[in-house]
Image (cartoon, rainbow, N blue to C red):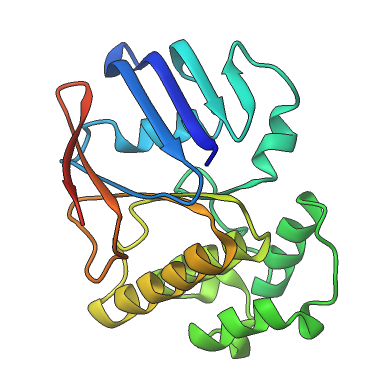
Length: 224
């Protein structure tokens, strides 16, 4: 197998705070990684760095074959291969859900008729969102916004999914629904999935790797 993300003595600082120090980790393609930790420990900053957002980074970091330090190649080209769920990438409030999906597909060079795409329609059906396509995002509940962001993320069929606390606004039923959807995508697309959260997800896949983020390090705590 090939590496999806490769850290070589990586240290990350953000706002004069150390997030990780001297991290060495090889995440293989098709891995399911969960990173848990308390608030303000740096989970979001770590995923932002993986997406190529600006942080103070030292050491070698390679993602999907692209070097981030030093940066080689086109960062926008790399981002088109990554599905990123984050507060840093909100939905556009004054546009419809359909328009948000169309913009995501256009920016990732995936342009097709939304109505005829079986993959996208299956996700909309499972999350009970198809009837909301023509509604304006600002009228959505916080839970529906979260689910809509997940649809936007999956619509581009990324090889790497970075999910920063995706269950925070979801109830137990919707959280379980999303985990099952991600598990199916993980298996069918052989995608690498990294999830940050306050706690381990319920009913995650066999073979997932769990890391605790604390004291500027990632500690492997279990393999399920």
